[in-house]
Image (cartoon, rainbow, N blue to C red; front, side, top):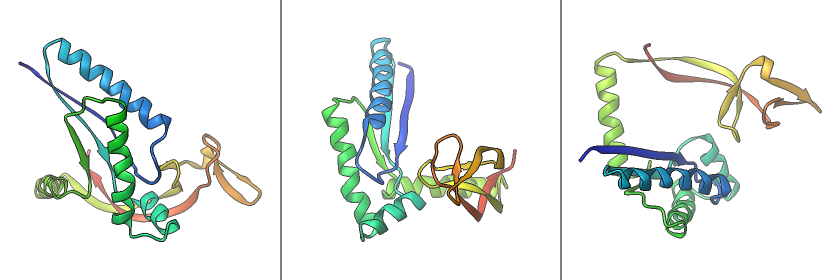
Length: 166
């Protein structure tokens, strides 16, 4: 039997799930069910990404520790999967030890093979969109820089980050 691997985005639990989360999850579930009918052994993953500025700020607004905040909100994503009768075979949280161990192992391999390097990255960033925008993609309205694409507020970010050697 052939294996088939499928994943939803791993969602940011910065707020309760919404229709977009349900849509992505149901779409993936349809594919998983179809592949099973075709005879595949389906490995269907969904879960939550519990790191990043969006999580930190959402937790701060609620005056909660980010991990405790994610513990509460992630339950809603697990409940959503049950309510939608999803057939996912795994639910991963990026704060789980199994995730950390796997990422650490991969990171060490990439470092050892010199496939990653550290450098600086800067640009106009939207926390709500989780995206960087170019100068052509932003505009100023009422003294606030926003994305022309989404209308979301952007802020100038400069940070050290790791990059893949391509």
